[in-house]
Length: 329
Image (cartoon, rainbow, N blue to C red; front, side, top):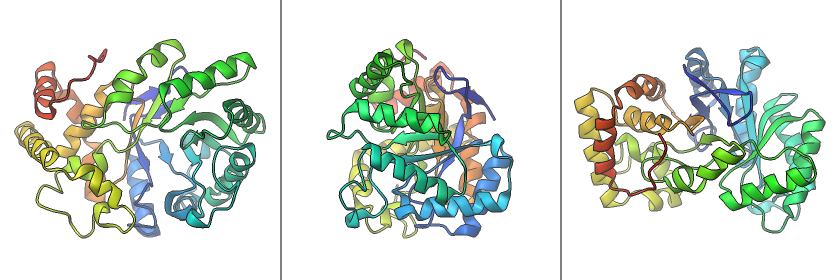
């Protein structure tokens, strides 16, 4: 496993990590999650990602049960949660979502209980909250750090402007700004990581914990011939994923990527993940496999990374046919 510093912090995260979004409770049970987390940990994965909203809190409970059973040294892995949406869904009452001091504090306490841990290594603001002043968010996160409940705080799907405003406020009050952002990044979703955040990497430092490096499974090739019944695109309530990704032009590109992967004697998934972590501004890419063989294949991305010569990167670029600002990697 390769380990990378999270932005300008001293924390090291495995280049590949494991997350529970969609899969835990929705697609897999305790026994499978136990097996998958064990495989990931044994392969050097040290970061496990979660959030209050995942399966209405049941995802954190499941991960908490697994970690309690594993009895791994708590100092050997990094654990996260995210707050904004609340876990009650449509039953949320005022103050049970958003980034107010009340909700961030209560959501953190609830996450600690569900995950059966004394502290969170990483705590994310899952979305920006236009109705809460950023100064309140920054102050609350620093209070949680001072209380020892979290070690680092960050954002997820914030804009570059919002992240820099948080740093400006933090500097003004001599507080700690966000250390990491969790954006979506894959061959079909590139703007934030490759363009919008470039100056932030240079000026204040920013770790990135990437979600959906496989575009919710599209970049595995499993949707090339339709939607399998056991896939996340088939889950009730996740139709938006299907609508976002299953477009004929993207399927054709995935098929071409599959041909390139076959020539390199790797899977389309491994090639796509390797491309993602090729970017040095990516701290870690979060894997979300539901089967042992999927996870083991995903973990081969570190070996596939060695195959990504400038020529191969150029071939990949010609397939996806995007024209981003030239990244510095």
